[in-house]
Length: 545
Image 1 (cartoon, rainbow, N blue to C red):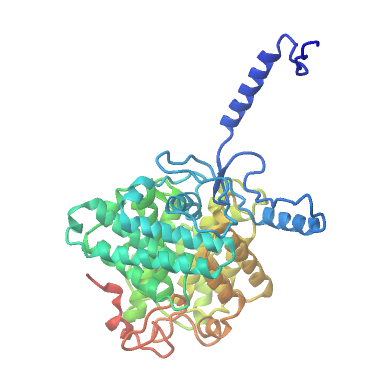
Image 2 (image 1 turned 180 degrees about the vertical axis):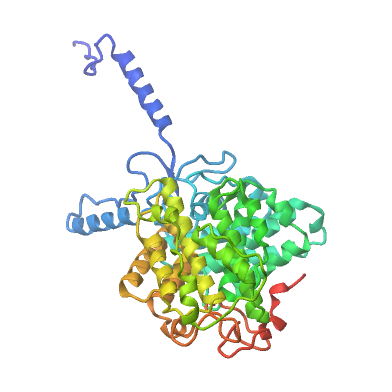
């Protein structure tokens, strides 16, 4: 019987077959190592189809192939457009490829922390450079760990766009556990002895503000109110402001910038005095804020300082009726417009005369300087510098609307107000800005959008806000959409239209959209017919711990 023939694989007799095969495998390995990890849909993935969430077709079921293809296109359309760059912490377990974001199964605490770093933090950062979070130190602090996982859990379920009963219960449980651990740590008598603990406590409080005010707000908003004032009390109790400004990187720097912006927005919308002085905004230079790392003298930081000064003047007018000096108002107006106007140094009260008598004085110069208008007249595509100039112009125009409505007492239909509104719509909706700049114009969008009078302007603002809502997945954006879409028409007309104007003496403050808990004298700050100073007697804005 002849011996059994040994099977020869095709090509194995070639002289360089083994060498070629080894070289081929090494090439593939090197190619795989060069591919960046993408943070797509809650998992770490490589390759061309990373993050597509393609459904698996059943080869035995061809009847539903059309429906599967439709779901596949929908899944591709819903995925995030930004590539998630960066590496993971080696000390924490990486996400398993099977844990796709489209799955409603709850994630572990480690997975939620990774989700927080690569998804949630990225939504609060307009810079292309990723903000690194020290997840190991976060994991060691119980209150900080619970708040991070609660925020990530809430954002995760909002991203899913579905909320089954078990998911809603898990989200509520995570929030309650975070608040309980935070309160327990707040009552620790040895807390004041270590600065890192107080830093972490402030960061935890800001995360609770984000959870109840930005990610998953409720209808009443009282939780956000107390979290917000709790953050002010923590800063005052342990004198953390100067120490926090020295933290230029990581989560403390980011959370400080978020809280300062929330504080300024709250002051502008409610007529209260901002906690952060306008001079402190220069301290954010070279710090990793939500606006990126900006150099000293950047126009955006100067604009935030001007808005802080305007908020203080509005608070003084609203609370005491004391009018600002004409020189200061003209200086702020000239800075926002970008004009080099010589300001008279004499101190005098600004004349709040009827609208017709001051129209010629206020409109004597163009609304924005030619250098500022040049960026807005640029056709697409725009580069990074042009996008940043347009981004800053949107905040400039929101400040101009504030001056016209609060300090000058102009009505919403006044030509100057509508001119600033039209330019604001152009800045917000005119061109597609680079990166994520278009998705970080929420405050100008509220101010400008609430003063739009034409259907075209309103549709443009709503479309831009809808795009931002689908990108960020913040629950607060749905409230903004309902407000601007007309579900609150009666409330809007109460404070932006007709006879009710944003004035100083006993009339409602028009930029009031943030809900507040009831006081002994009133249910909200600035109701119709409310006298100046009444809310200040019981207002806990100056609460000291």
